[in-house]
Image (cartoon, rainbow over all chains, first blue to last red; front, side, top):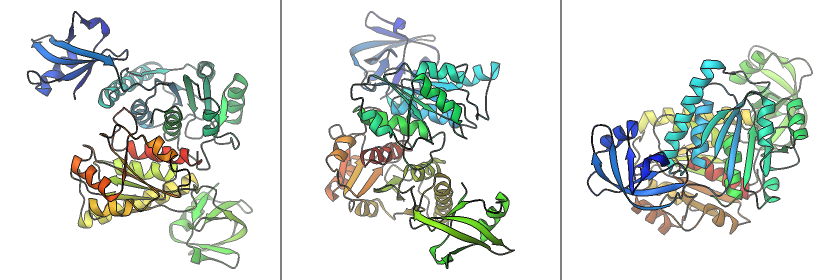
Length: 244
Length: 244
């Protein structure tokens, strides 16, 4: 079923008002009279709708029913990913949204080869946000996960440690598995996942993260690529919290 | 540490013999005298080695120690993936090897847009096998997962049902979660994961799979893309069996 995100302020009096790209999309879909589709306010509510009126600038959509979005997981999990080369960030953003991430935070770390700044960073972040929105529509999320950037490694960790379970995925950790760590915290409401760049984290970065309160975890004996690790950890969190 | 796969027949008398691409790779790496690296027989044993002699056609490598490969998971999990468009199969093969799949089986199903056959299929499968080998080297596997093709949907399911836990990931399944199914089978040794093409499975395909003995499972309320679903399911299996 087609799915649109509409700002909550455009939904009132039993009608949702769509314009811009959504209007173009509604027209392109050639939605028939009486055909149901979903409008989501991006704040966790889904509205079952039929098309009521389309003109040049606006589509008016009649709301028949509303319910909490089914696509939102019960856990709030933020993925902190170090900058990576090529299209790896695009890939992780798209998949992390599907798998249920609440937001994605990009940050620089010592071994990052790519460190976008200034106008390039603003442009890239806008692109990642667009990918997140498209993925959220496609997979049926009730909220559009945000993609933001942290100005420094330290700033990213400062934010990540605030979660109930702050996971630092580290290749050199040999003892504590992500599974053990998650199962020790059955009532977690918020989780953060921090993963490194292509070359991994430096020892001092891991030590600093632990000092600041992160939990170093391993995801087994295989070395995961920088674009595989965040999605593996996110899937583990969704599994552990009953969202799979 | 550098890692090479060498046929077990090329390992004897405390020496491993490398040639072809591996020889080129050893030369390119400029391995120093006394520098340790790993040779794996692709059957689950890792050898700690130093370079002993290199000539035009062969590198002789002295074996100092051997141990079971740490990178092999305790569960044997095969990923059955319907043919998909673009580079999605390459992507899944690479990531599935990292995440611990034993093998990958590609198969046609009704809604597959791409259905390679004949010479094109042989060429593609060779390429996927190469990707599996590269991924196995990079992530430290002890075996190179095979990539094979099933001639028909039925043939794929006939093979998949032989596993202790044969999982059929189906969008329309609303009751049995993959987690529940995995936790009901704590002693599983073999698992199969079957996932569909871009448009999903047809109802009759799902019914046939269940008739043949597959267990229909859901992976939650979000609609996963055809390249996300197999990796999500594989991660769940690795988590459930203590391999994460």
